[in-house]
Length: 226
Length: 337
Image (cartoon, rainbow over all chains, first blue to last red; front, side, top):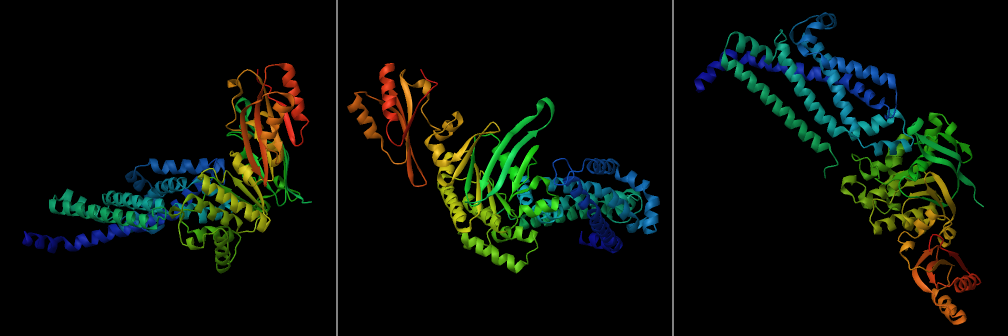
C-alpha cells in the first residue's frame, strides 16, 4: 500500500502540487477582485433602495437588473462569452490568468447580493440612531453598516470563496489549469481513478479548511456573542 | 423667563396617499422651553413617536414648521440639518447601541462623526461614563450589559456632543420599574446639572409625573390638552386625559346607580375632613368609590370618586357644599346614570 502511494506520488506529485497552487491562486485572486467590484455594488444596492439611507429609485433598479443578469448566466457559458474581453485584458484566454476575468465577472454579482443581505441584517434602529446624530451617508456605511455586519460579511466571504473554488473546477474543463483541469484530463479522459479521487479529496479538504477558518473568524470578531 | 427652544407650528404628517392615507399628526402646535422637561404622552398609535421624529426630521412633516432656536429646520439643507442634529440628541426604547463597539467606543462615535481627535474623544467619553455611573464598564460590549446599563451608555453617547435638547423616545418602556426610576432620576439630574432640555415620549403616566414640568396629551394625532403637569393631574379636562391619569380608574357603568362626582384636591388637603363634615354639616352620607393620590413636584394631589344619594336635591346640596371648600374642585361624572 505504502509502495503504491509512493509510486503514485513520484509519478503525479508535482502535477498535483502545481494544480493545487493554480486552484488556490485562481480562487483567492478572483475572490479578491470580485469583492473589489461586488462589495461597493452590494452597498450601493442596499442604500439606494426606497427605505435605504440614500434612496435612488433608478440607480437601484439598474444595478439590480445588472446583478440579476450576471447571476443568470451559467458560468461555463459566461466564460466562453467573455473570451474576447479576457484576451484583451490579460493577453490570454487560457491558463490561470485566462480564468481570472470570467471568474471575477461571474462572482461579483453573486458577492453583491451576499453583501446586500449582510447589510440588511444590521438593526435599522442603530442606523436611525446614527442618522439622529448627524452622520453622513458615507459615515454610516463606513462606521455603522460595514463594522456591524462584519461577522455576517465574513461568513459570506467563506460562501463566496467556496463557490469560486467550485467555478475554478469548471474552468478547468476548458483549459484553465488547477485541480479541476487535472480531474478532467487525468481522471476523466485518461481514466486514472486514483488521480480523479485525489483531486476530489483535495478539493473537499480545501472547502473544509476555508469553512472552518472563516466560521471561527466570524465567531471571534462577533462581540454580540459574549 | 426662558426662551422657547423648539416650536412646532401647524405640523401635519400624512403617511401614504389617496384613500389609504393615514393622518398621523393633525395641526400640532407646541412650544418647548429651554431647560424644561416636557412630556408627550399618548396611547399606542397616538402619533407621539412620529411627533418626536419630526423634531429632528428623522421624519419629514407633510406640512408645518419646526423651529429650533428660532430657525426653521425643515428649510435646512442636508449639511445644515446634520449640524443641527449634533445639538438635538436622541435616545431610544431599544437603546440602538453599536453592538460591535465597546461602551467607550459607542460614546466616542458621535465625536468621531464631527472629527474630534481620538485622545480627546476618549477623555470626553470617560467623563460621560462617570456621569452616568458606569466608569467600570468602559470595555464592556452592549451584549454584556443589562438594559439599564445600555440605556445609560446611550444617554452618555447622546450627551457627547453637548446637545441643547435630548429627545427620549419611549426610553424607559423596555425597562423594569426600578431601572425606569433610576434612568428617570438620571435624566432629571442631567436636566438640572447640564441645563439640557429634555423631551420625553411615553405611554406611562408615572414617567410624566416623575420628572416632567409640562405635558401634552396626544390622542389620534391631535393635542388633546397641554399644560403644567400639576394642573393636568389635578383636573384632566378631556376623556383621554382622565383615562391616562386614572388608568385603573373605576369603570363608571359598573357603579351603583347614584350621582357620581369626581373631587380633586389641589395640593395638600386630606379626604376625611371633607367626607366627615359633609355628614356632620349636611347629614349627607357620601360613598367613596375610588381614590388616588399622587406626588407631583413635592405636592400631594388627590382625586376621589364619590357616590351621592339618589335624591336630586341632596346631591345638588352636596356638590354645592364641596364646591365652597378651598383647594377643591368638583365635577359630575357625566356618562353615568
